[in-house]
Length: 221
Image (cartoon, rainbow, N blue to C red; front, side):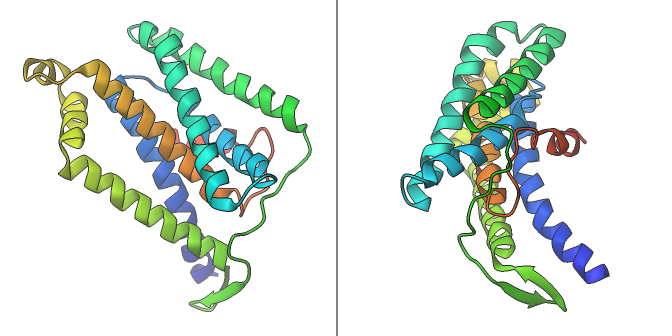
C-alpha cells in the first residue's frame, strides 16, 4: 500500500511540478495570479487528442503546445498586461478566460469523456507495485523538462533576466532589463510548461472539459 502511494505520488508530483513552476514564473515576473493556468493544461490535452487523429504523436504534441502558447501570449498582451496593476480585475479576467476555454472545448468536443492512446502501453513492477509504463514515461518526461527549465533559469542570460525581474523589478530596470520582455518570456514559458504537463497527463487521464479545476487547487497551494 505504502509503495503504491509513493510510486503514484511521484508520478503525479512530476505533473504538478511542471504546472507549479509555470504558475510561479507567471506570478513572479508578470505579477499575474493566472487562474486560467490549468485551463491551458486542459487545452493542450484536448489539442493533442484533436491533432492525433490527423498526424503522428510528435507533430500533434508540438502543434498542441504551440496553440496553447499562442493563446496564452495573445491573452497576456491583449487582456492581462494592460490590467496588471488591478489585481482583482486580473483575477476576474483569468477566471473568464478559463471558462471561455472550457466552453470552447465543450462546444468543439462535447461533454463526452475522451481518451488519448498510450504512447508506451503495458505495465512494469516497481517495488512490488504494478505501474503503467506510460506513467513512468510521464515521470521521466517531467524530470527532463524540470531539469531543462532549471538549467535555463540558472545558466542563461535569459534566465538571469527572468530571475532578476522576479526578485526586484526596479533594480532589474536600472540595469537595463526590459520588464515587458521578461514578462512575455515568463508568461510564454509558464504556458508552455502547462501545455507540456497536459501532454504528459493526456494518455493517462480521461479528458473532460472540467479537468482543469482540481489541479488548480494543488497548483495554488
